Image 1: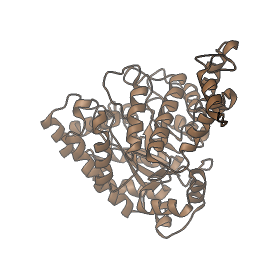
Image 2 (image 1 turned 120 degrees about the vertical axis):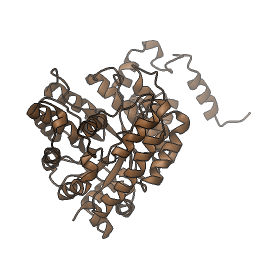
Image 3 (image 1 turned 180 degrees about the vertical axis):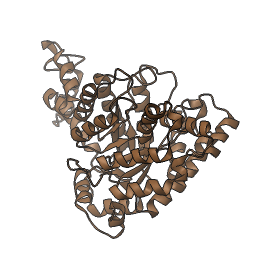
Image 4 (image 1 turned 45 degrees about the horizontal axis):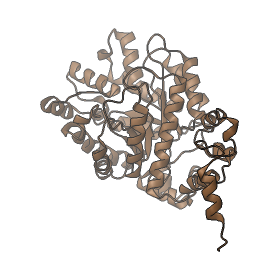
Length: 431
């Protein structure tokens, strides 16, 4: 019996109990959400070292960090350092998006290190192995693709990102309507390349029941990825994106009928004025499935600062119902992130997630901010640093202050306006 089926039968599993305790909600709330498909708990039956994480409606917004081998310079030890940095910074999940090198070894190392849910995109490995075996990734066989999907699930991967809704009809629509930036989804573009070269329908769509059979066997959560993710503001909410979203909604229903947990991955570039509409459309068409958004970045010009652009988009998206944020680093669009950029990307996404949760009015979330405000009023630097979302950085910045300002605020030193006004306002005596 899968987690979805046990929730439908009213069972309060240990995983549900653990998620409820961490979220500060009642176990029955989590069970009801899981039964409805509005909450998922990605947890492969073969994982041993995982702390269960709940993603979905009424729970705190979660953050995912991506790592992986890429090119000849790809190194497992380097990626391991990134994983550890992401975990230390508070990521709630890790995605191994390796496209080259010893992908099996990288995935197994990731599963060994991370005590969070781990996701992968099997198409990358299937195409890489086909290129070695056949001389070209376009010669990938359908059975070879599904062998990789099962291999990754059997290793213990908790959620699989699969472009099951990118059909030939959607591709033709994109071709006919035209786009400023046709394809930015790496997995989606490689899949479409295979489809166009072989003049065949998407094998993940044609064999979706086979996908669900594997997912059910290992109780893996399916993450329906969007091949038509807009890569610039001009393409946001265009025909191909919405067309694919309609198909993804149908696939969500089929997954639930098969007893498989499912979430939907969302767009990359979305202007601020379309974020509410974008999240609302996904929630409507995909029957309330948890929304895993890439950023979103809210402008096309932030090269070198896309982690900031994504934090803006992520906060607003979380406010309107997106429950899972894929981090974006400063290296987005430019290259691969280093360890520091990975850490910074996680922190930026966590700030966005928390801001969205505050705006949604989740019970208890605002208490963190209230406590920080109280310690600021008291000029209690030690507690402020302790409560900061990134205590390490806060501590370093505070240490740089001069001795003169140690008893006052960071701007005014011994003439601290906050201290003077607080003393006046706290004086209850009247003349």
